[in-house]
Amino acid sequence: MRYALSLRAAALAVTVAATVGACVPLEDSPLMAKVQDHLDALEAAGITGVLAEVDVDDERALARSGRADTDGAAPVPWDARFRMGSATKTFVAVVMLQLVAQGRVSLDDSVDTWLPGVVAGNGLDATRITIRDLLQHTSGIYNYTIDFFSTITPERYAEHRLDHHEPVDLVAIATRHPPDFAPGAAWSYSNTNYVLAGMIIERATGRDWRDEVRARILAPLELRLTTDPGDDPDLPGPHARGYEQFVDGGALVDVTLQNQTFADAAGSLVTTTDDLARFWRALRTGELLGPAEMAEMERTVLATPLQEVFPGLRYGLGVMAFPSRCGETLWTHFGDTLGYSTRSAISGDGARSIVVSLSTNRAGEAALEVFAEEQRLLEDVVCDGRD
Image 1 (cartoon, helix red, strand yellow):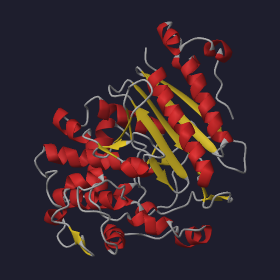
Image 2 (cartoon, rainbow, N blue to C red):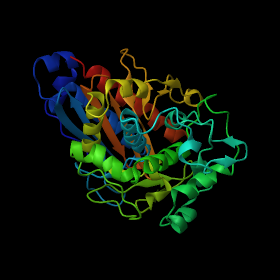
Image 3 (tube, one colour):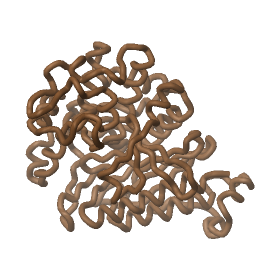
């Protein structure tokens, strides 16, 4: 199902800059025509349904392609809820940096200071791992979700999709492994880092990290559709159904029903494109963090292991930074969980952004094709959305 764009053929013949200058509405602009082409390409690459929100200079437009589920013809709802996956990490990092600004924690505090005995054994030394290391993925602590997903099959998903997981048990999976490297010596993405960050937030505030996210981010920004489902495996409606391709070339499996406590502070939040777009604008325009904390967040390191798939990717404190063809840095945090992927990008000044929800995860070569198309989409919005 294609998003109707008036004057599309004519608009494609005009540059985005000229169109914006002529005050053509964003929804009728060649930029949105280009976005639609990307979404249709993602559907053609095997994504069941895809929804995008584009914001340029306080003007908003939506686009979609595909279907809400594989059995019907209905499109993805315009206000669809979806699991944001690891985009949750930016929310958690913001809360931690607010605590830093208040003097309640320090980025140089060790994990052992706040969680004595939690990270230990197999050569792990929590006295040398800092909160900064957790937020930046330089701790060296093993990623517990590798054990989760390296053996997952449709049968195991069906058997364990309702399981409850405690944060301490997730960390225990990781500490059964030796560290990947000494603290601060390298970079490696680890969901364990953010489970620990959530535990530290609770220790520092006396409240669950979810409560702190609600009080410090969701309530002030009035993000009413961003929630943590807890043990409820149902995704609030309206929503598209989520599908996982467990093996290259395999069938798509409906994985909409799942208990997200396995992701905890590393990736359990549910949101909408509008809520997530408003969060990113508030972050980039200084509503959530002061200049000193933003500077810390933007101190990035090269994400070395991911360069083959994402050339130039750097990681700050809960944020990713990409170079672009127009010289603009794209700020983002990707999110992936069973059945859903979240992609976003925003310019440094917050004036141009896109949030995309995809309701299918492909495997193998198909996944690489999807990654490449996503990158082209994000870059086009941030670069071509400029006046």
